[in-house]
Image 1: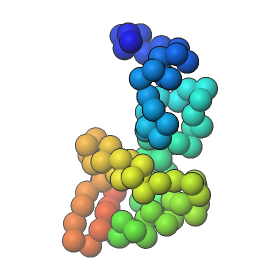
Image 2 (image 1 turned 135 degrees about the vertical axis):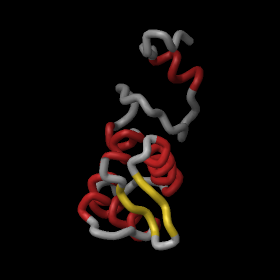
Image 3 (image 1 turned 90 degrees about the horizontal axis):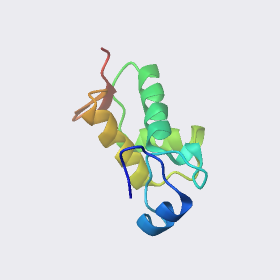
Image 4 (image 1 turned 45 degrees about the vertical axis):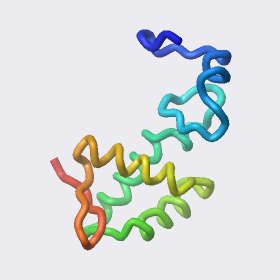
Amino acid sequence: MNFSNYIFSENDIRTNFKEGDFILLINKSRHPVDSLFYIAACVANELKKKSKEVFTDDLYETILNGYNNKLSYSDFILSLNFLFLINKIHLTERGIGYVYT
């Protein structure tokens, strides 16, 4: 598969990804609400609304009820990992908070 141009054919997707794999790119076979970028944007949006840290489980319930009622916990955690890696959230004993830059 050629990753240099970021173009995936249906055959590439069927060959290289199995059912249930989390795909970062939005394509014809996935809904945008299932992408890591969408979930991370929803998490960041909710955290911006809060004045203090939020517990992980409470944040998951908020995203599940407000944005995507079929969101798996593992996909939610992947979005938190992504936000942490790009320095948009911080973690404390009190929970997760948004990093204002």
